[in-house]
Length: 247
Image (cartoon, rainbow, N blue to C red; front, side, top):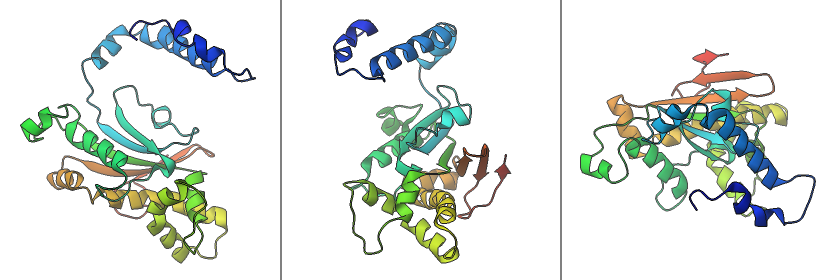
């Protein structure tokens, strides 16, 4: 409903059960702060965004509320095309499963800056604006802890989570082989990084990603944000944790 006042559109929601946390007020004040301090102060910037998006980054990040790639890396609106899920995982190419990830990846790599239908007309030879895919791992990841805790017999106790994190089993197996005698929290820390490498390897199974890598128009990077110590590690496509950058 274009132009519909925020107060009116959320009036019915405000009648829901009261509590110490008021989601309607939080949303309202958050938006009003954004509009006052950003949207209204920088109209030219938002006018440019209305013309289209040409991000240079595509970021796969975790849904963890403590980990916001735009906040950590100082990305602004329009800088990064983002996809977030449990444990920032990229599954192997499979048109029958995980289509949400595949659709986001295909759109980011093939269609941004062109449009979904014009890309087919142009054979995707122009305006391939995403130049780097970053898989953004982080410390104290609950999804990785769940992966490392998977029962050896393959049984599951969740509807979706355990099946999803099995994408990272190659990382878990590598960690157990190399760090068998380490304490569980240390194994999880190793797996948080190795799971990023597993996702980087899985990206190569997507033909449109591999094609652009061969052409030299796309880079793949792994990142790890330690929010406990305020550190960020970045590495390239070597399938091991090798730090090109450590801050």
